[in-house]
Length: 94
Image (tube, rainbow, N blue to C red; front, side):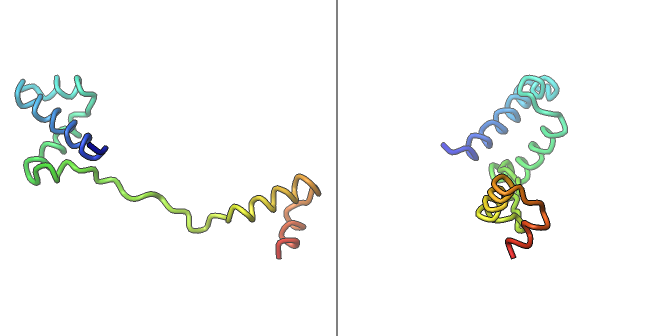
């Protein structure tokens, strides 16, 4: 069982517990879930079934302007070894 399936199972357990006891507040406290989150899960579950309980998180954040690691290493080397400032380092790297 992968993490996504475990998360779906957990959400279903919260919904089923609340419906069997008839007390949403108690279920939310027991499972550590905000009531607004519970109602969102329940609505999605009623509408789409198990597919509605899948995580809707976005993909990993990307950093397109990140400085390449080898350039960072070169900058650190110049800074530590030769005590160069930013202007000289830029000049050296160009």
